[in-house]
Length: 118
Length: 118
Length: 118
Length: 118
Image 1 (cartoon, rainbow over the protein chains, first blue to last red):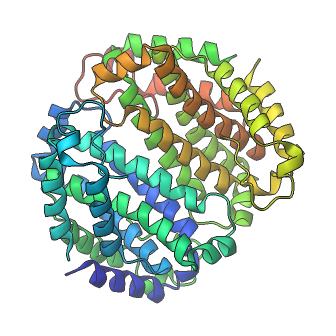
Image 2: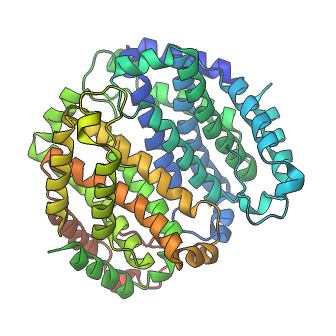
């Protein structure tokens, strides 16, 4: 199973329900934000230790996995309706970040924030 | 290239910069929300028509693709540090949604919201 | 009733429950994002017309008002624990925006985005 | 200065720029999420101690205050265009939360999450 398989499955899912007209980029981006909000609930109050303990259990991991799936579903669908190649874009961004944050420079530096994004 | 390849790349990226200790689930989930906020800027004010026109250009699509890459990067990294199989979780969620929203029932219904999440 | 009254009430609320130690800036900011995610659900799929119709009803408005209250609660609490004067900061920001977006320049311009923030 | 004063100011601000048509509930809610994303950047990577140290400086507090102002601006504007009384709604929500989370029950309980929202 690949991202492309999931994109095709979601395309069919939407078509069978006649939901394409609702799946505008604006609505899908907004839905992505709704789902990230739900995901955040799983790390809302605990300390790093408490959160790690929860995600070390099958139940805790399963609950988080469901929210992450919801996020990925909308991300895949948004990429599909806008014609974006998610894997290629992500690979290119990681390569650009490697240039932007040279390992030898940022290692151990408290100035440089540990951003994976640019 | 697959999601697993990207996860391995990001794992190495973080290790080389000694960033693992910053990549707690709480920080990564929060970073995911930061990036979704940036993605939302691309659909913030335009009408559906204006947004579609922008994403029909290479520049507009490229700008959106970069934000989507940032979102996926944090999603992949969060899955990696928590030991979640993103593709399997997403596939399972789509299957569950298919049961929850039977096509024959929701088609054309204004009551049922076109949710891809459950 | 004023924002200051509500800040004092929330301070007492937290103290009576011994919740102050949970109310770190990071946790409160994250909670703000959770609540905004819930608020977004109320504008997630409808057209502007459908949404306006829903908020024209007492029930629709009441549901939205509850989510907005949750957002304001965390915003007030975050301002309180960090010692920020929300009203003064907001008034100063509006004044700065008035300089940044001169009415005569942006009126009718499709270039300038109708941002209320800077 | 009160929330009502700021609401009136923002109403005038939008009118002078002919921005009312952009200020739909959907666009304003989405803008709220954009600004919360920017606010989150200020607590994205630091430990609670590092974040507290930053907000103990005038510069750190000023930077956070600007983001909080942006959030409040969109919240006030959204309340204004939908006819919601923010202070009344918030006061009512705090009263409801006091019933929902009785101080004697939740104090010291690790079960009950320190939610200020319901």
